[in-house]
Structures are given as C-alpha cells and as structure tokens.
Image (tube, rainbow, N blue to C red):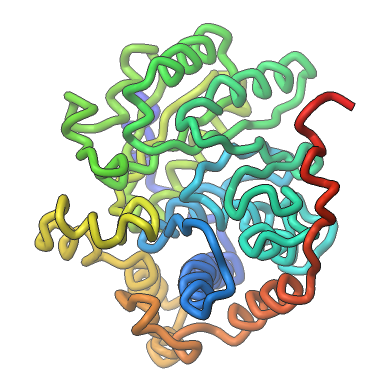
Length: 365
C-alpha cells in the first residue's frame, strides 16, 4: 500500500495531535507571511527598496504547513519565492528567541534593504543566503540546482547516523530539469532522508505547467524512482501539514526520499517586474479562480468549524483576497505588525558596507 493511500485512510491525522496553541500559532504565521509580502511592496513604493520582489502571496500555506512539521535541526533549502521560510523556520520556538534555528527578522529585512547587517552584506537584495548554523542551505538562481546539494547534505546526515531530514523546495518547472531527476534518483538509490516539496503554482515564469509535465500531477514523477509522491492542497495549511508530517516520519525511519506536490497558484507575476506582463499571458478568469481560495480564509473556516476559534475572534483580521494597495495594518494582528516593524526599523538604521568589502568572497584570500 502506498504512503499516500495510507494517509487518506488514516482516521487520526497529524493535525489531531496539535494543541490549540499550535493551531493559533499556525494561523498567526500565515498572517505573518502575508504581511511580510505586503509590507515590502509598500516599502518599495515608498522608494526605500531596489531590486525585484518575488511574492509568496497566496502560497503561504505551503511554507507554514511544511515548516511546522519539522524539528529545529532539520535542514531546509528554499527558493526565491520562499523568502518567509528563512524566518519562519523554527518560529514556533519563539519569535524573538535568539537560539531558534531560523534567521532573525532583522537580518532578513536587512537583506531586502541591502544593508551591512544582512547575511549577504548587501551583495543581493533577496534570497541568495543561507546558514550552516541555522540549517538553511544557500539558495541559487538555478532552480533545481540545489536538489543535488540537498542530497549531499542528506547523505552526510545519514552517514552520521542522525535522524535529521532535509527539505528542498522547488517550483513545478524545475521538475523538467535534468538535475532534478539525477538528484532524486541518487537519493532514492541511497535511501536518503530528503523531501522534495514542489510548489506547483501553475506557472514557471511565463510557461504553464502543461508545457513541462505530461502527467496530471507533478508528484507522478515519483513513480519513476519508486518513492512516495503525494499531492496536497496548497491552499489548506493543515492538509499540507498532515502530509508533510507523514513524509517526515517516513524519512526519519530510514525509508528514503519522497515528493510532496502542493497545488497552489501564483497570485502575481514571476516578480514585481513581471506583474503587468503576467496579465497578458494569464487569462483573468484563471487568475481569479486560482486566487479564490485564500489560505487565510481556508484556515479561518477550519478553526471556526472545529470550535478552536470563535467567529468574532476569527473575523477580527480580514486580510483575505486583499492586494498590497487594498490591505491595511488593521487587517493584521498587532503582534504581526510589530514583528515586521522591528525588522524594518532595524534595517533602516543599519548602515551600508564599506566600499572595500566589494572584493570580499570573490577570490580565495
């Protein structure tokens, strides 16, 4: 019996072991990921930011759901649309806990602002960062290029005898690349504890998924490697959490790698430079359909139906289906607003690196 079938037949899902505090924390993290996106768009319109922003709007459930299923010592390998992952990792250990295995909000906002206190020290404004200490593999612009790196990290952990899991995030377009297949084939043969999360938002820049995959689900590619391939509702954070949790346990038990496809939809263009062009290559009815199930609304409805959250409390903050121009601070919890504010304030007050730093890390010293 496949692991995917086992999950659908399981009466007690991983979410049923969550506490009420866990449920509310997950809901709050969805708001945080959304506000991060909206706040940065507003900051760019104020003229404070340069470079491209890659929005994760409408895809927050993929990041929050998968990351919440991990232990602090597990590795992650984010891509460009996963900027919130750098500070969401191990966030449940305390948002301002300096010991947690995630990069601080101050450092991440400094990265976006191009300041000296950024992990990349102003060499880039986005996600080309990582941390061995925090168990985050540096991202690259070559999508699928970090899957072989993740396999190498997973091999190292297996050789050490640890039960650490390595999670690599990729878009659906990356599954058509050779390094995707080579790395997963290697991970399958060696039974490495690696989970490949596919954020299927239907569009690889301007190329529709139907042009890169000839199967109904991208997860079907797992069949060629004889490993589990599961499809999750990428708009439902708890469905993502349930399926990710089972794959994490599968990997920890030494069974090898798997693929988790999260079906979602890219709200805007590939980056903010592509927003106007995206309106031309994506039919408006497809966009409206893809954005019709906002992850915040889906999560809120579940919490109310399960009596975890009262309707009055659930409707206090309504950021659902609102763009950056439509949303205001009143649509978000105060804790979320203050957390981003401390990051933005820190970045504004952070300096620029000295010009002499320009040659650092280019050649071996």
